[in-house]
Image 1 (tube, rainbow, N blue to C red):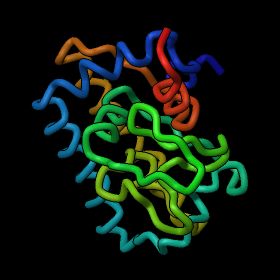
Image 2: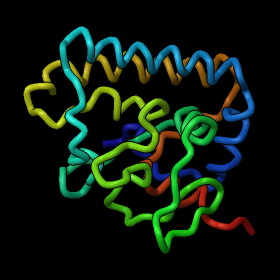
Image 3: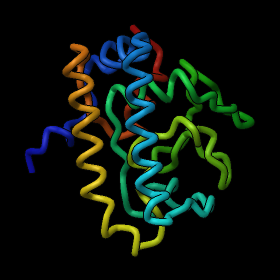
Image 4: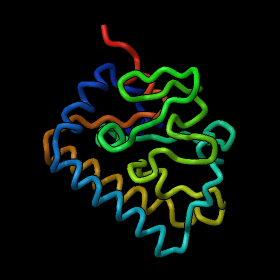
Length: 170
């Protein structure tokens, strides 16, 4: 499948995220789009059970993809806490690739700044009937937001992107 959203992290991911993080109007508009996702879930009476299952990506059988704008939003608004023995680099905790780095037990440390996929994906299989259409619509709005502001668009798997952002620069 040659879907451009499934490309691996671009070599210049930090260069794509930084201008998004510095653009307050983009972050404000992105927050509005993310609230639309929350409203869509609320309208369908879906709520997070706070079980942490979907944050265990490999165990649950999925990957979470995010845009450069969503990464910027996480960087600006989430403050992950260090777990004992974990180093924080560039604001991110090192964690195994199959776990969300914002997961602390069953608790999400980035609840208010979580990505679009986190807002629309629920552990209950019955929730999948509406997920794809709503996700595609809102994701398209995020892509248009990048284009309208002349910002680089990157679509990358969350844990790989955060590992790239956390790694020390050259």
